[in-house]
Length: 558
Image 1: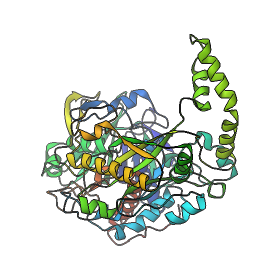
Image 2: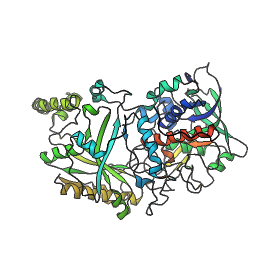
Image 3: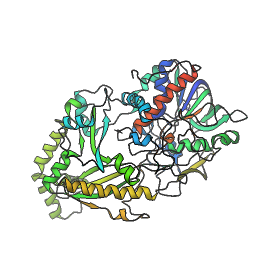
Image 4: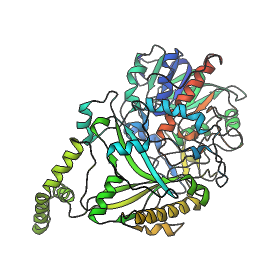
C-alpha cells in the first residue's frame, strides 16, 4: 500500500490492522518489513514525515534533573528515526552482558547469548552486511593493520563494523566515502513496505492517547493526531511501542489509570535509565614513529575488495578484568587530530577566514599549506583510491571511552509538570552516573597506560577528571544518545517492564521495542541488538497472530 499522510485531508481517520507499530525507526521498520511476507495486516505509525521538521522535533522538549541529558539532540521524529543520522557503528553485546554477574544488581537477560545469536545473524543481514562477519583476527590481517598483541589480562582488541549505505555496493561506493552516508533502515525498506498489500505506513501521526479494556488487560485502540490536531483512531489486536528509550517510558506513563495500574504495578516504568557514558580519559604522547605504528593498529579501515564494510579497531575490557575487579563493561577508541602545524589545520584556518588576521599568520598558514601539499595529496589518494585511513605525521592522540551502566532504579524517566501541544505531560530525565562506572573509567585508563607502555606505543597521560567522583569538568562523562533500559526486560514483573518476548507485564497485547527493553546495556552501540530484538519480536508476533501455530526461523532473505 502507499504511504499515507494524516495531514492529507483526504486520508482516513479510522484504521484497523492486526498489528499496530508506533515509531518508524530501526526497530519499527524492522518489525514491519519482517512481517511483510506473512500477509498479516500491519500499520506502521510515525510522528514525523519523510524528512525532519523543526515543529515536529519540538515535541521532544523535556526537562533534566540529574546529569545533563540533551533532550532535543540525538532523537529524530522522522521516518527512519535515528538511523537517518547515526554513525553506523555495529557490534553485538558480549556474552558476559547476558549473564548474571554477582557484582552487578539485576544483571542477566532472560535468555543466553547462544540462544540469541541466530537473531544477531539476521540483524546483520537486515543491516546490509553481506554474508557472515569474518573473524576479527582475519579481518585485521586483511586490512594490513599491525596491532601488537595485548597481554590478555586487562584489554583485548575490539572491532566495530559499519555497513555500506547502499543495498548493492559497487565501485562507485568507494568514491562516495569522502562524504559517507550510513545505512538508513527506513530508506532501505521503504519500497518493500510500499509494495506490500498488507502494510500501511501513516505519517504525521502523533500518539496522543492509548485506550484499553475496562480492566486494563488489553489495549483496544490508540488515538493519533497531526500538529494541526487532525485526529484518527487505530484499532488492532496487538500494539508495539517503538518510539525510543525516553518516549517509550513517557507513553506508558501517560496511559489511563486502569492500564497504568497494570503496566506500572511495581513502579518500574522509566526506571533503570542508562546510556553509554563517553569521556576522553587521556591522551597518548608519541613520537612520529610510534604515532605511525599506533595509526596502523587502531583506526578506521576500508579496503577496495571489502567496500561493503568499514572496520573500526579499538580495545575493550576483558571478561577476566570485569570479573576480577568488579567492573562494568567498557571499550575505547583513539581519536586523531592533526597538530597545529599540520597542513590540514592550516587549510582550515585559511578557509574559515582571512579577514582581520595579521599578515604573518596568514603567510605562515599559506607556507604550511604549500609545504604540506604532498601530505594532503597522499592522504586523499590513500582514502579515495586505496581505501585506507588518513595518516597524520605527528597527531594529537586522544583516548575515548564508552561505558556500560548498571541498572539503577534511581536513574529514571519521569513526567514533567510541563505539557506538550496536545496537553500531555513532557518527559523529565533524572540520569545518574554511579561510582562503579567511574571506577571502571579509572581502571581502563590505567590499563591503557600499562599496555601502551609495554608495547612501546607512547606515554599515556590521564585526564584530571578521572580522580573526582563528583566532577563537572566539561571533559567529564557525557551521554551519547543511547537511551537504554527504561522498559527493561526481566522474567520477574517486580524487576522489569517487559518479559522475554518484549510483552508488557500485565497487558495481553502491548509490546515495547528498541533499546528501552535492554536488561543491561553493555558497551556496544545498540542498533544491531535493537534490530535483532525487533526481528525476534516480529517472529513472535507472527506466531501469536496465527494462533501460536507458526514459528519462524531468524534466517531469511531481506
